[in-house]
Amino acid sequence: MKIDLPPLPYSYTALEPEISKTTLEIHHDKHHAKYVNVANQMIEGTEMEGDDSEALLMKAHKAGNQGLFNNAAQSWNHAFYWDCMKPSGGGEPTGDLADQIKKDFGSFDEFKKQFDTAGNTAFGSGWAWLSWDGSKLVVDKTIGAGNPMTDGKKPILTMDVWEHAYYVDYKNMRATYVTTFLDKLVNWDFVSANFAAAK
Ligand code: MN
Image (cartoon, rainbow, N blue to C red; front, top):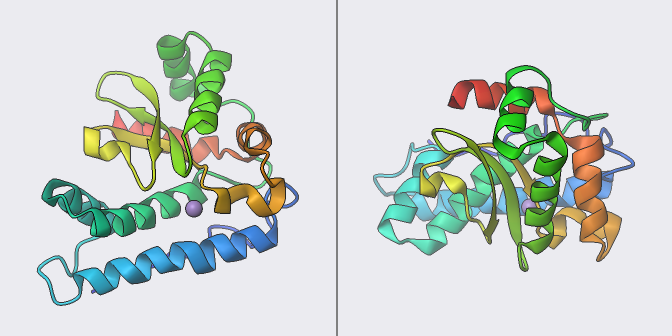
């Protein structure tokens, strides 16, 4: 039993023009696939065979196995990231999630500002996150393969800010990619469902 590479939840052209077919092909079929393949190679023949990527990343973190953590966490992070986007996404959430964002950040605009800053200030390669910490929503940035689960939080939204996520389409303009992600790509239905499950 191996961890698998889930197919994209939409076609390779579905996020155009914000994210190109070329980016999705390279990002999913090459980068994401490699993390999954390397993680599977690392657990082959060990007692971790059969674990899913979440169990693997937590075990690797606890064991201080950085190599396995990087590949297992990148496998989980990417599968989650694909679901965090949809064609014609963006805008604002509604219902319980909208109420909680207003409660914990003061306003949706303030949440956007913090998430935008997290995405733009993750130095080098990393991720921006919205997570439930057990009592409130929090924005974090992580470096490399980092995931807020290792701090006991439940991620409900993520944005990949490794250069491979945006360089083909935005070159060095990470800030434009981040703004576009929030305004045109976020799948708030998925994020709301994650929030309902986390709370
Ligand atoms: Mn990536």
